Image (cartoon, rainbow, N blue to C red; front, side, top):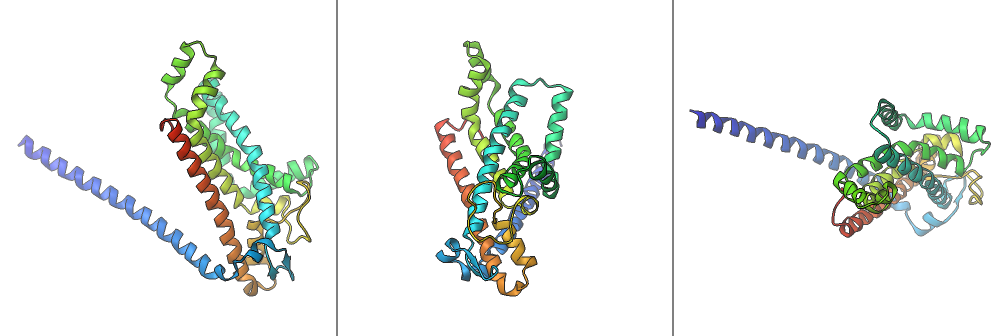
Length: 296
């Protein structure tokens, strides 16, 4: 009797496991299908305008002809400013919270605030960027203002990803290093960080790619409808791929005529994001191989 009950329970468990795997596979398939549908639609609508001239020429005739070179340059410049601001501050905060700070109500409150900031709409960051960087620090509508605003948007993601990567390093490795006489900072620099870097890089680049596709903060802090040339410094307005897509798709007086240009610009933006993600995957794989797969 007991064996029969055991077999019945086991068969039910197997059916539940199969059902769970099936639902997970179905959800993954739906996400993949939607992604492929979006890519196919973009390729169908914008592949005809993709050319070397489209990537390297200045826009002409009120954005109805020419290329998107200023948009590419502006997006790269803003992304670099965002990276230089968000990664160091996010990593430093994660190291402090995970390696130095004690588990008190204060640190728990800080972590809660960081997670809440990660969910704040990007348009709120845009308004805050206007108040702090554009007007407060008198940086004006410029690349530096937009990059710092996107950096603020990215920092919560960077902190969370970096802290999770640091937690993946076994505590025993820290204890062994400290027992051998190494200082805490020496342990962090030589033992913890090398094994947490793959996760830190992956999380950081995911945050940067999200920021690279944001439109609302750029709308407030420096993106221009059109410019006669490339920006000469980080203190000048700029054109950006996300804002360019927004203008072509919703604000242009000849929306139907420029729709292929909007699709083509979207393809270029997705290509840049995929390239960044591929770089993250390659760096992560090499670092994991170098350190024996010690970190996730």
